[in-house]
Image (cartoon, rainbow, N blue to C red; front, side, top):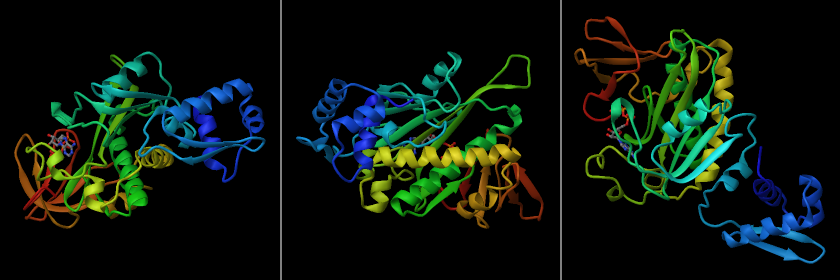
Length: 335
Ligand code: ATP
């Protein structure tokens, strides 16, 4: 449910002309004083709102890259993805927050968003650099009815939604580095970490959380630590333009909702596979599979309907690579 603030913001943004105080009251079922209070709060936050007697209010300009619960909620038109939002200026990591909300009964689609993380995480206990004011960090809670063996495909569904949303908003050509990273011009802009909670002793999912980190408005590679400077980039560095985070997050959640519903119908990647493979980085090129039980090289040939990467070894043998413990690299570089 949207807050009054998000609703008022949405009404103002969606109207080209002035919106009268009465219209706002009628639409939201709140008093004139309540509307007036919210308008004042929004002005204090930096929204430029013109008021004209008898005509009402008009949103002239929003603060640059304003990123708040109301701004994000006012843009969402989804059925369930992000319908319930928790926004934090700063948190440890949105994945554990989402798990906590899920344990307390949070609904399917509940989303935790943060402006900064102090302990952002990657796969296998690695960390995710999470500076303030520049990036998107969010985690969505899902309550699937399918069995745990299908869960790894949710990472692929999310990767597809994020990659397409970024391309839609920025015009950048995004690639997916199977299974969970998104790259632009050979460097990583997005990491995805999906985690599962199963019912004790039962082959059933209690909930699943899918966390996403997007490097959005970093100005230069120097903003990343030396450790990742060669492999990390941001949408701004690659496109030369800054990106409005709330608008990008809206596109991501909306596309994810659509793609997840497609996935749910077949519980595999059969319908989404073509779109996923169209973005698969290094397809038909040499890859190295860093398997903990031994690395090997081959040529990446796409994915199966159940989301495994198909790698053809030199002797022609086709190996299915399961997500989880494995990282895939280009033969001569990161991608
Ligand atoms: P890889 O193939 O890169 O090893 P992975 O999926 O195993 O991918 P993740 O767990 O998704 O890696 O992400 C963690 C890794 O990503 C870190 O070890 C670091 O190398 C890199 N990294 C950390 N923060 C960022 C960031 N903000 N932008 C890009 N890369 C980052």
